[in-house]
Length: 251
Ligand SMILES: [Zn+2]
Image 1 (cartoon, rainbow, N blue to C red):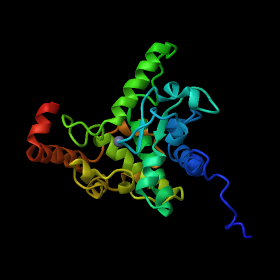
Image 2 (image 1 turned 90 degrees about the vertical axis):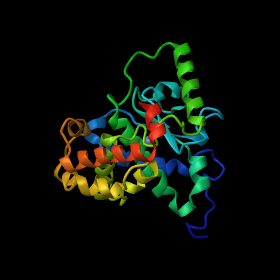
Image 3 (image 1 turned 45 degrees about the horizontal axis):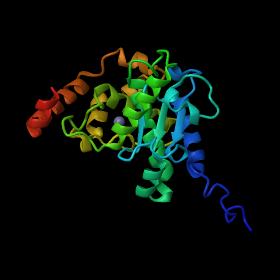
Image 4 (image 1 turned 120 degrees about the vertical axis):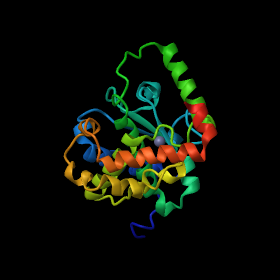
C-alpha cells in the first residue's frame, strides 16, 4: 500500500479534513500581515467543529471584533485575545470540488483577514467578562449570519475602498509568499455592484509592490493613488443610478 492509498485518518472527524488547510491559511496570514498581527493569536474556526446553531448558513465565513471571546469555549488551545473568524467549511465543501477546496478556503480566509485589518482594531479590547452580554452578542451574530443578504443595504456593504485596497495588497503578498492567488479569489467586486477587481488593481498600479513592507495600519493612513479614489467615486455614482432605491434606504 502506497502512502497515497492509505485511508484518510481524518475522514469523519468533524472539521478534520480542513484542519491542514486552515493551518496553512493561518501561517500565510501571519506571513503577509506580520507587521499588523505581530504575536497576537489569530483564530480560524471550522464551522463543522462548532455546535449546530453557532455558525452561518448564508456566508462562507464571518468575523466579529469579539468573536474570540464569543467562541472561547470552542478554541483550543486558547492563547489569549486575538482576531477570530469562523469558516463555513461545510457550505464551502458543498459548493467547490475537492481539488479547489484549498484555493477557495484560503481565498475566503484572506477575505476575512482584509475585514480584520480594515476595522479600527484587530479585535475589540473592551472587557468581555459579562456572560450575559457575550451570550447576547453571540445570539445576535449567529442570527444575523443565518439571514440572507438584507435588501436595505447596498450589495457592497462592508466592502469599501480600504477593504478593496487591502484585498489587492493581500493577494499580491500571498502570491510572493508562494500561494498564487488573484484578488478576484478574495473578493468578486463585480458581484457586489462594483467594477471588476481588475479595474481597481489597475488603478492601484504598483502600490502593492512599492509598499510591500508597510503595515496595513500605515497603508490606510496614506492616500491611495487618485485613480483608485476616482474609481470608487465613479462606482458609487454608477451604483446610485443602477439601484436608486436600495441606495436611498441605505443613506
Ligand atoms: Zn466580506
